[in-house]
Length: 382
Image (cartoon, rainbow, N blue to C red; front, top):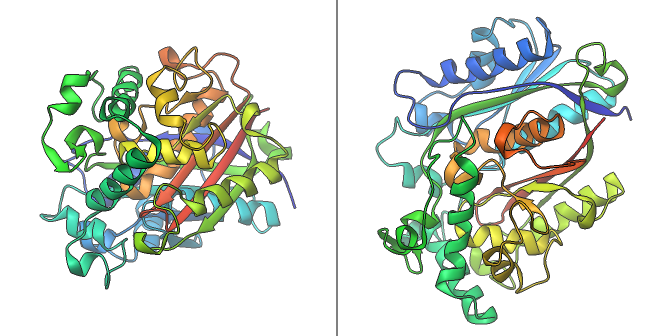
């Protein structure tokens, strides 16, 4: 199996992109990535998207996007794993390059979420339709139950939970592509509208339009295209129960733990080796549980550690330097790719004011539903 590197990246600004359609924003990100890598032709491509049909009324995205970026005839496939679609697209592209089938592969992700009236309905299709969505349970409701279970089990306070969006918004101030690059305080979190007790609006990631793309090639060819390639050192993927009531413990996410273990094993690294991590903070409680499952903090300790400054610059590990899903935005099909782009920029020293010092290894954790799927990438500066 060949070693694989990222040689180019591109993304749109995240937010409400009313003047662009789904093909426009994907093309913007993909063409930026190709230009960044210095390639005009690709061998293959993947489109990560959760629900182009329900959000933008457009299926067959593999054909649409290949045609629209001028790559007619190139094999293309749409990849779907709910909110983990983008990360899963990168995994598919990695396997194609690693196998030797292709040399230059584009992996992108896209979602146009503002064009539909009922975005909550679309997102709910990633939950268990018969037992959850049919009975009116939304994702805020599911994660609220997880938050309540965690708070009761580990004595996490509401103020400590609010530390996650406060931190991530502070990081997003220095991200030019972030949807909400403004700071929050405790009053702003606790005083925002209640969504599902104990989660308020500021505990929830937003509805977002956006796209992101990366170009992969064999590591031994990477220096022909860039002086600063980033190696994909480890990948782990796993699935878990789609329904929250089938989780043995609502304060844990088995798919995240398993995917993380597989990525660490492939990379031959441990949590202490990782310089920074982009995690799937779709809701505040998700960041806490994910950090514990990935081994960065002991069970029951991550929430208090974040509140004490251990997950930001100068702490134990920088978590979500991009601003995370909460502040950077969460165009579900593009999120996993954008996380990997943040890793690329950090590892190549291009992250500007949000740069993590002496960053050698970065991690991106992308998750679907309430832990129904997860993919973890570990990246290395080479």
